[in-house]
Image (cartoon, rainbow, N blue to C red):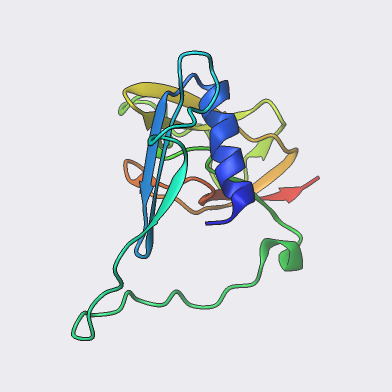
Length: 154
């Protein structure tokens, strides 16, 4: 994980009044905890990256994703998840999705909800254009920075 990603997580924690955050990946683990003053504590609970053991020689490696063109090469913009949580395409199970492929969006258009710590967070497009792809699956977990939608700018 790069320093800019950690700084982005810290900013999101401040913005959303989140006091504790933990992320585990195959080879690393990060845990962030904020103090009462809104600043990051400088103690044993301060931001740390803890190396995790790599899978043993007999372990099955994770599948490799097929190569795809970067969004910049196709001229499309990715709407990425600003947090870890559960992705929902609609405001309730019986309601229709906020957006579909072909839907025109503006910077203020709500495109989905991400549930994090029992809080429903509306995610806005923050770009003007037309949705060309839905990349996340409804009701499934998403990670910070994971692409959720692709939008062709207009």
